[in-house]
Length: 605
Image (cartoon, rainbow, N blue to C red; front, side, top):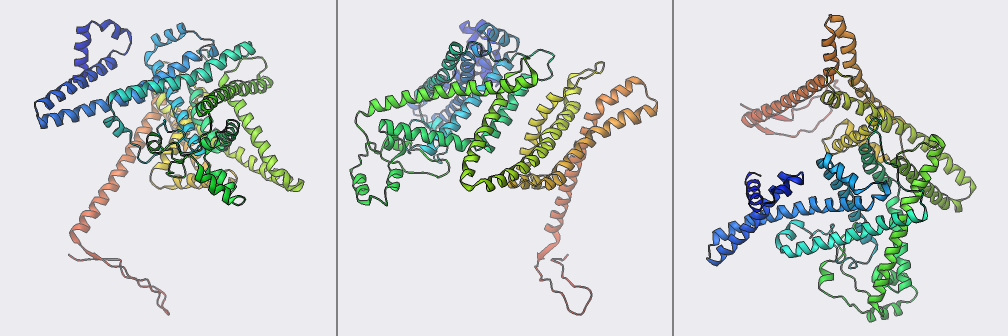
């Protein structure tokens, strides 16, 4: 960091761009990046000179240094700059949706530049992630080779670092510009244009209400984190939403393929051949022989698509119809119209349903649209799920339907009880404990009284509980990991309420309640009996939680070190004195009360 920063600083001062860099509020970062760029250019020039004078060692060393700097800059561009551009594009195209202006964004950037840039980068990163997830879903439906122009992230031969090393800079620049154009066009098509249409057709529907007062008991950021980390993953993972989306994509692809005579191009001839194998084997064989594989080896085959769950699949040829470029153009137009309609439905239907349902509870009061959107999204999901389940049950008769409804009602009751305990009580206690241990001691002075908002503590507790559960599942084997894995393996349909309450909810809630109550009892009940001053009582009440946390952490570290020293002692003892180990069969002798066993290991000195 030191050398690139000063190289960039001297260059910026020498060129007279110091005022512009200072106005960006990110002087250190931009100066360091400029220094890295100048280092890369210098290394290229020195590498060329070493090649001319045939200094092999210097040429190799300079080449390695250039590769390191080049890969670092490309990583910054791919992971830092590109999501930031996407985030700002999403923000600019959605200004009318939130009744905001560019002046508001300028003021927010000037007041908190770091936070503003981080939030835009986060939104852009989420957008890129879900776009890549949708591309992976398309690869499961489409014929291998259709998406040859997109990099396949599931390809075992795909190595982004090797691409950064081997491809020249102009190829990376061309790919970056193409990605910006594609992602920007999708943002315009699915955000800016639908907003204009909604404002024209439904003038009173927009803007969304996302304004919060400073004394509101919940922050917009916590709601967005809940939506991105809890609501969307729950819909995509647990609600069969991915299967529904895949079915919709497949139905759209089949419809577009038959309307435009592109079924062979989009889905391939394999499925059609399998369906007609029993009826027309000879005609199928003749059709396969007459198929025209217009794409052979080359760019398509090099970027062959790989199904996500089926492993590598070879490139499949297709039948090219007449006026193929015109049909591809009509396919792109049809796709754009479909994306526009889907975006209009997603922007209006959940919010409209959520507003209508929330009006029964809150009346005419304005509610944050994340509440209404999440509520409407879940209602739409439940409606679609109920309709699909009833359609599947209808052929089985009324008696079976009543039996299924009874089973599902019991399962829903159990799920609600588990949700209240694990998604309500545990996150609330965890968020309150986090507030008392970390947030309140850091943010509130001793002469002020901390205020606790249960809703915000619960929202942050949900995120903390999710992080703790993920770390537990990745960690070593212990009782909490075993119980969580068992609950996850049982699923919702085979939910065991007694097991969850006895093995998971009761121990966790007991530990959290003890962590909250014992320090409070000590600070408020025991310390006043010692006759200390009011200032000391306040100090103990405010600092007892982080103090006990430090004590627990130190005890954990000490116990870990004691176990490590015991293992080291056993290892040294066995290494010095152990001669060998012998496995002995256990045999019970008849007619005797006791049993005799031979020690599994013998040692000699």
